[in-house]
Image (cartoon, rainbow, N blue to C red; front, side, top):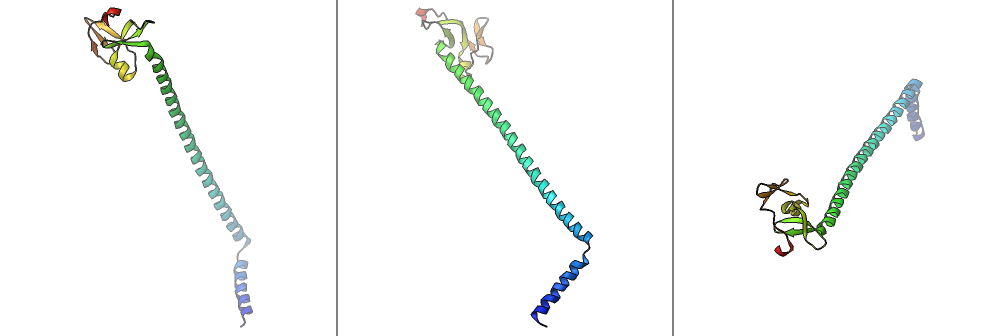
Length: 148
């Protein structure tokens, strides 16, 4: 037997196998291949949708952080605007007039210095008390210009 005839014999074998497949079998194989391609495509779409949802969540979280930071910036700007209008006398803060003299009701030292909050201290009997931090102060000082 020559090499050519061996190839021919093998070729006939494969042809015989393929000839044994009906058109239905071939269509079934094509359908399976198509179904696998569709499933892979759907999987890729699902992965892309998941990545998109994750990106949207990250964008929302970033927007929230940005809003918080912008709010904090506004708070700090307000503090910077208020600070020059205050004067410290004894153990409390007051608004000051054009001559740097304290005016109005006193504010809690602790609340302003710790939390940058202007909380009025209120009289409770013979002492003053902060409604926020509950700090107590002595009587309201006489803050005439000669008492500093």
